[in-house]
Image (spheres, rainbow, N blue to C red):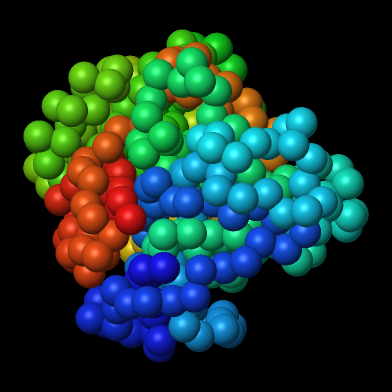
Length: 347
Ligand SMILES: [Zn+2]
């Protein structure tokens, strides 16, 4: 098969479109012919190399995969999965037996990993994957199997942040920083389904306009209004928002905390601008903020959010689809940050 191989960590040019043996499914696995693989910022980090991450080379990136079942392993029941069925793949890899898995907290699993980060992923024509991670796309799905690749990781992550960690309530005020990435756009849509009033930030008026079309209520351009927390306070009549969804980290941390109402919750799922930030502890205890970490989600989260996608209540925003052999260009686009929504590679 053709695949984009990473023989060593480093620059974009290290992504090589080459031949690689088609994987053979083990008895409990399913061979999926990949229709689409969506990019995440994680792909950039893994390409460059992460501290402590030791991979079998060549590595194959790609966490968000959709495809068609090509072959079932000998022990896979045909009752649930059949050849020719369109599917998406759960990008979380968990043991199912540790203390946290038994509580349904799969992303806290003692051996938790992510497809494309800890194991070979989807920048390829085929992938062999344990059957429990393969989820059928219903025939009634309003989105194509190709576009379904843009759903699992980002929507599961956003759902976990809002529903499990922040425990969002009807009609709350939610600030989402950097409204162009997949998680932010998923969070915007999920927040709207529970009647939230949404506040979004971006460096681009064009992106803010696109966010408005998706239901964003208040728009803040942080280039022209760098102290966006002051704007949030004006917009909320000095109250602040109930919830902040932030994945930028270092650059936004203080302002995001200052955007919260008393007793508000900040949820972070990433630190794309850097991991070390200052927290004013006086503010933290006096205003009784909750600072919440969140990673990926549970299988229950993924199933719940997929149901909403299959019903047409949530829809991935697609920036563009490129052929798999143009993976280098796709990484350039993602690094540059001019995109709005997901970039998908099609084998
Ligand atoms: Zn586990």
